[in-house]
Each structure stands twice: as structure tokens, then as C-alpha cells.
Image 1 (cartoon, one colour):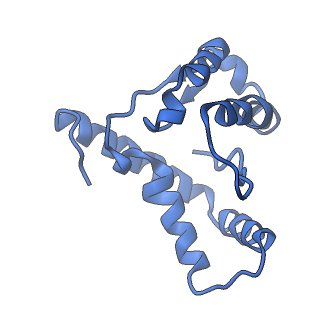
Image 2: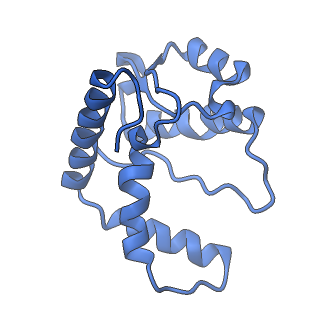
Length: 146
């Protein structure tokens, strides 16, 4: 609800495997949480990501279990429950619409600006929308809802 903790562009040509994702969790996300949300690692993390095979791989689940992060369940085939998909990316698309980029660095800088243009209210709204969508899914037997 307090905004983006980590923006990490995947380098061109990189395959996002379980090992790559595990390394990002260990070397990028965890240090970013420690830096930007002091005390959160000690008080407990509720972690949410979808059911992509990379996210559910043993290497990843072992790391999260080792951190003692509580992993929130994500129903299968429910992209409507991923805040990046229903809120962050569409909002960024609006900001980036119609622009042309010459380099990868231009894209990275433009997405940073788009993220900075999101105020705290936007993240609170996304979190509330996520809770409502999760509730709708639970009330619908775990089926896809839009």
C-alpha cells in the first residue's frame, strides 16, 4: 500500500527461471525491503505473487519459507488478482502511451517516471481493489472473476 519497493528490469535476453527469480528475491528484493521499509522483515512479510511455475518452483518456495514470509494463496488462472496486471501496468501504459523509445535505458527511465507519478492514494486504491477481487474470487468458489 505504500508504493513500489523494487523496480528491477530483466536484462534483454535473460530467461526468468526459478534460479533467476530466487536470486532477485535474495539479492534485490530482500535488501530493498530492509532499506525502504525498516522493520518490516522483522515484523513479518505477507508475500503475494501468482502461480507462474517460476514462482511455485521448489527453489523459490524454499527461500520464502527460509525467510518465514507468509505466502498468500493465489487461485489458478486468476490474472484479475494480480495488482500489477489490473492496476500498475495499465496505469503505466496510460502514461507511456504514444511514446517511442530508442534504447532500453529510455524505457527504464520512462517507467521510473510513470511509477513516481503514482501517488500513495493510487496504491491504497489498488490494495482495496485487490481485497475486493480476492473476496469476489473466494465467494465464487475460486473461479476467475473480472
